[in-house]
Image (cartoon, rainbow, N blue to C red; front, side, top):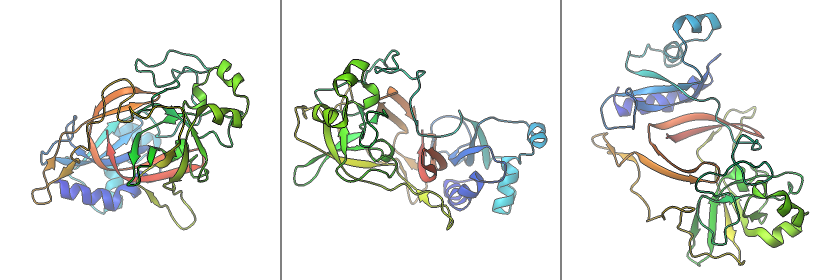
Length: 315
């Protein structure tokens, strides 16, 4: 099918396909039938990412409808052979409720840090380093996430942008709660002993205060609302940290500006702009990837519930 048709199907039937009875589909999106980066070839499919690709016989024995059958039941018509595709993925999409010893950490759980170590105190703040909101958690609970990037408003105030589930505590945080760097899960036992309570922690490590977050929407009796972003923002405070490297990516390279958006030509329907993307994260370090799908619909598990996301880019 062409791109416009594929997008129409996802927007109409993406969420019902995701929650079809006995479905093992983790998320659906528009992708090319062939593997690899999303291209401008006129050969798009509604692609389902599943825990495990099963044969027709295995599906039947487990009472799981095939994706094509689910598509037919929901869309009211049988898809063409090249209109749907199945890709095996790695399990549920979820935030990490608490990092285990299997994840490389500098703090009390030990382990070797990634090659670009973002799991320590940085005198000069930059993108991709560990931060968290410790209010209401510390010292009993430890947590960490990633500082995404920084912004400046017209008045010259500086802000750090991260996730709601990192510094907004999945909707539970209040305005003006503190953000610290590094995240408390990256502190060693010696460092924790020197900061035994929240005031002593903030005195040493506070870098920002929460301004607000995009509220995460969870299912209610009235229905299942859609989310598009998991985001929060905090204003940087005057501190002993240097603010000259806010455009740097941990240890490698720097932001050069705003890239042209990944988009499609409204007249021809052709995709525009390279599909290559790059990321620096506190846990993953530096990674590269390709955009393989657009218009993604997925559920994401949070400590406070399961949220549905739409209009996602699949990398």
